[in-house]
Length: 377
Image (cartoon, rainbow, N blue to C red; front, side):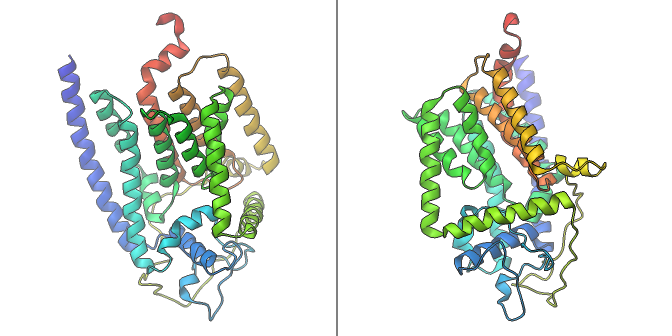
């Protein structure tokens, strides 16, 4: 029986590897054809940050270097297209002098490397060869065969970096290091300054009084934030928060800004920097979906509803004994859920954040049955 299961799994895995290679080739094609519009605004933002310009409110004008032009920026909008934290822009600062057409392929390679590395880290927390193959099988199939991964790579998105950081934290906390929980907490703390919603993992551990992990998170986040202030001004962080408020208001008001027509057909070696692959894109944020049926919900109400959901989940789970993996899984589910409540567009590429949830569900599938059906085990 076990031999048959292994044979079937191996055959399916070979099939999925073939699908993965096909997807990889499609991503290369899209990278060659299109300009990676989301990567472009972050590259420009990193250059602006390094040149001491405001990376969130800068508006390109004739006479400015083309290296600072994001052709999809809307001139009528008070803010530009940059929506990541100053810390995230610092990540891209080593590449700012590289010509954009080369950066496009570097980021393509990094996205795939981060994707495969994330799965690899989850795989190596298990001693079961069957589980290892099962994780590769499902994660490769559900992520790589999806349109949201095609969109993520084509647009040059960064969510897979957040996934990698989550995977790294999970890997460390399950390692044999003597201070695994403290170190994994430090890594999470660093990750939070790139993606603030990752704090939900820390809050979940706080509810279960896992103090070493919480202390590590505090150390990591404070150290990372203070370190960022050595490289960027506090005004850049203030500008980020102010810009996010404006983006939130624009999203609620459904303001449509006219496209800016710049007289350039080739920018930094790319002739189709305006182009987008023909992949379905739908804003699945709760705010937008409600707005589409005539219900306007403010940011404050959304955050209140999200807070009530989180508190309810915590109150329920406090009465249940959860393993470290299950606590971590709860945090990952809340992160995935929180994206729907943010006062901002939620496009399909956000779905890559489901990878940690899927991987941990596979690893914990038997233990979870015991949690919800203790009398049967």
